[in-house]
Image 1 (cartoon, helix red, strand yellow):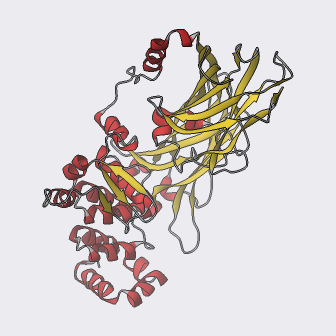
Image 2 (cartoon, rainbow, N blue to C red):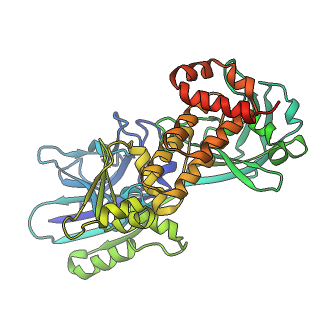
Amino acid sequence: MRKFTFIWSVQNYSYCWHGECEDLESPTFFAEMMQQTSWNLHLYPRGNGDPDFISLFLKRCDNCNGPEKIALNFELSILDANGRDLESDKIELNDLEFQKSASYGLSDFFERPENNLVGRAFTSDILRVRCTMWIGEGEIDKEALSYAKTRIRIEKISFINTIESFATIILNLKKTFNVTHVSKHALNLSGNVYIRSEPGSEDEVMVEIFLDSQNAHLITCQIYILNSSGKEIECGKIDTRNDLCRKSTMSTPINFEMRNLLDQKHEYLPNDKLTLRCECTLSNGIEFQRIEDTFYDLHLTPLLKQRIRDTKFAPCTSEPKSVSDDLRCLYKDQILSDIRLETKSKIFHAHKSVLCARSPVFTSMLTTNIKDKLMDCIEVEDLEDSTIDQFLLFLYTDILEGLQWESAMKLYYSAYKYQVQRLKDFCTSFLITGLNKRNIGDLLILADKHQDSDLKTAVEKFICMRDKQIFCTDEWECFMETHSEIALKTMYFYLKNGRD
């Protein structure tokens, strides 16, 4: 039997710009033992017909040498960071033959995760695939192995935008900005900042960013507000790496409503100026792709295979990781996990020691009568998949990523339920910062339900500062009808402590 293996690593995989039915082609590899033929792998990051799957195909080059037709078997695999199979499908072409330019593979090869940034298949944002081809049966009499690498080029652009005379800015009037670019690609990055004002809604500060380029794609944007002391506070984030469609325009409100900025103008509007820093990440093609190593006659040197594997899949030590990074990998890669948390639709693997270290509730659950029961599963059917994932990630890393109003409300409940005070404090601070007349009812209910006096007082003080703007709204009238007791207590607080 003659055997040829091709292993292909795609670095910065989450920045692949390819849309549905658009492929990323591997470097061409020459398989001398496969009758002098040349081949490529064709990867479809967003599927070839079904966007829920990553598609992978083996294609014979149309201009290759060798016979017009060749019959062989092959196996396609996705590997983890240690070179182990995560997904593998063997395709036997006993009755089929590869003509020149013919391709075979699977459209539904690997289920595309909701988040390309996590999971064992995407450690360090690298996707690793393997194609093993063979002709014949029995003992291997000829074997070769080839490694290839493709790196997606990414570029970060950071710039400051300052809006003068913010307190008197005209609503819905867009302030345009342009970013000068110094690279040879001459990318045209521009945008607008304006106050979006709509009937029945709080005025919001909007940021729009445009990229005018045929060769580059706008992938992420992070927005920070600079306060009076120059400190940066993250106030907006757009990340399209998991989206099906690429966009040339990004638009998002910052997490501070206009009224909140004006109320805290000494902090956020020094000299009546709003200063924002935007950090955009672009994907602009392939930085490089090449065949890096090829090893022939492996059937004669069996020990060499293991040495090659140990070298090629050795952990990268060029960039030291923090404890937080290591613990994130421990959770995401499910290394030596010993406990499962089950929602209604998904299973999450974790470590008892981490849960106990971060939550007294988990400590009690997992250590009480430990001789009588060895718990290996905790049901959390009252929590959504995304909430439990964020919750566990915080327990491991002490970091909250992509926090939004709805997710903060749900994480607050998780923190309360499992007595994770630090997470509760994070969520409380975020929710108070995002207070407006439309969501005060939600926070009053939350504070009342969990007997959180600090949160309740913060909401009541917010109301006292705005009185008629709150009490004269349809939202408050509806709140009084559905939660009359809480509304009564709040109005009593206002009458007792409100401003004249």
